[in-house]
Length: 179
Image 1 (tube, rainbow, N blue to C red):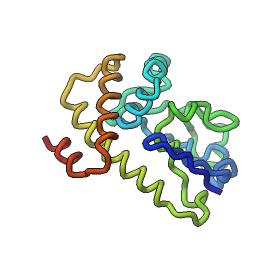
Image 2 (spheres, rainbow, N blue to C red; image 1 turned 45 degrees about the vertical axis):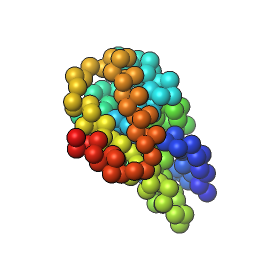
Image 3 (cartoon, rainbow, N blue to C red; image 1 turned 60 degrees about the horizontal axis):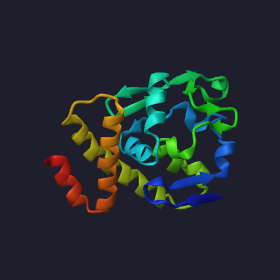
Image 4 (tube, rainbow, N blue to C red; image 1 turned 135 degrees about the vertical axis):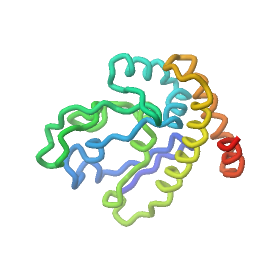
């Protein structure tokens, strides 16, 4: 069964089947996604800038070209998953990070097995929206000096909020990326 917690860019899809993942107890967490520019803006807009800076300081997150990568640690379930490492935030009972601090992918991605025949339309729409927002934000980030400071994160949050407000006008987004 899929449970949808709809809240615009903060939407979450939850599945009981994720707790019984056929990929092993680490499931998707064996290969955590990047916390991309749109994710970072969303997290900042939910009050998470200090948390991001703390995670950077503790090296659980680290800069990468698309935003922040999540550190991976030894995976005790490697025999089942075939993956030696897993997300640093994966604990015995799943994710240890509240949903408002996670990559959006961690909140909305439910694999086809867990969907169990349900339509992937909402997951696919969220994937497309975040991909568009990431393209725009990546262009804006490249156009300015990048320092992982509170000032930068607050700027990114404002830019992200403005994109979400623009709605689904792809032409406006394309113009923002191109020029």
